[in-house]
Amino acid sequence: MHRVKKEIASSGNRVRYTMNVFIISVGGYVKALSAEAIKIGKSIGHLTIDSTAQPAKYRMLPAIQKMISKGYKKKKMARC
Image (cartoon, rainbow, N blue to C red; front, side, top):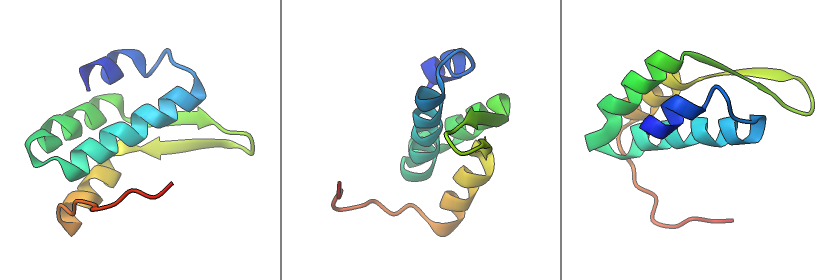
């Protein structure tokens, strides 16, 4: 997570999107790391990613807090 914090600003759009999803997932699913993910989300703030359609702004902190408020639910199966 600390690597994401250091490198997210200088990464490409697709990598930044993936890093964003990683921090949200860790904060929502791993109880021991949720406080650290929230701290990193606060330090990064708004994340602008230029997609093919239009630029979008992503916010880590509200997404993490929403997952925590719903409870920690582990998925039993991943579907691709």
